[in-house]
Each structure stands twice: as structure tokens, then as C-alpha cells.
Length: 238
Image (tube, rainbow, N blue to C red; front, side):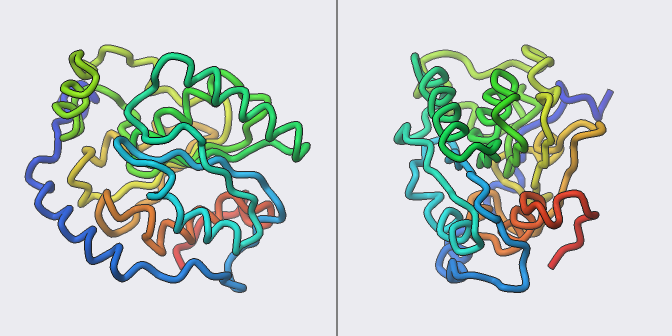
């Protein structure tokens, strides 16, 4: 089937369009409070960067979350080069610690590969996690991303093969929201969408993959879906 995840190809034709991310970063909005947007009411949020990126890449997003009344945290694992030995256990300990500190379930936000990691953490510790939001993440696995070659070179092993781990595509037992852009030049946008289910949702935005973390449409969607006042309401773009 043409629409089968195993047949989704890397978006090579879209890749040149990622150059617009430079403009998106240069024009990124100030991470200031938006009184008209939903407020976080102290909800803890763990933010996981994309492949090859560190906490610096998520600084604007975390500043925005703080301004909106959330309590954001960096994943504290440095540059994301994929899950290394001991990282999953360290992240699960961090989630458990933050859950105990706040006496509240966490929200996880993962950009690109970070979203895949966030879903797996929620699969292992659903009792401490309320919501996972993925930003342009290759949820379906396989070879639907232009970064597979780079991943293979850095990790000295082949990238995931189509259909290699189909169970990973199924969402964890928590609320999951995927944000995607059809002009994504890194991940096939179809692979960035959650499969249809009672606790899944997909929100489309405009822009590049590399600019998702500073995209005001993404910021608004995150606040709307994570805020206790609006998370159960239909999402309406700002």
C-alpha cells in the first residue's frame, strides 16, 4: 500500500526548503507572556531536543513556557545523539523526581527524535506522565527521514528499517499530540502524525522542521493543549 508507513520515503524534495529555518530563527518572537493564551498553572514540562541538538535549541520554547506559567525543564542529557547506555534510566529517574517534587504528572515535549524518546518514556512510566507532544517527530520509524544516513554514520550501525519496529508507532497509554508541517524537509510529514485513536491528536502548522521550536503557531498549540483550562476543548489556531 502506498500509504503504508513502510513505504514512506525521506522528503528529499522538501529538504532545500529547510533553509528558511534561518529566517525563522532570526525572526523568532520574544518569549514573553501572552495574556490571551492559555496559562500553565504550574504544570511541569520536560523538553527533549532533536537529533544532534542540545538544550540550547529549546531555550526559546522553555522561556515561553515559563512566561505562560508552566514549569519547564531541560532533559539534562546534553546533545541528543540518540539514546545511549543508561540514558533511559536517567530520564526515568528525572521524571520520577519531578513528579514527586510537583505532586503532578508531567507533560513531555520532544522535538524530532526527542518526540520518539518522549513517547518511549511515557510507555515505560505512564503513571507519572499526563501528555506527550511531539514536534515533527519520526513516530512511524522506518526510513522516512533524511537524517537516517547521518544517524547511521554517527552511531556506527544501520538506521531503522521500514517496518522494523511497528509497535513503536502505537502511542503510549497517555494523551498524545503530534505537531507536523507538510513542508518538513527532514521527516516525511505522514510519519510525524499519530495514528488515529481516542487519546491522539494531530495539529498541522506552517513552517520548516528546523524552525518548529521557534514557530509561534507551535507555541500557541502547545499552550492550548497542555493548559488545564483548554486541553479538553477543540483546538482552534491562534
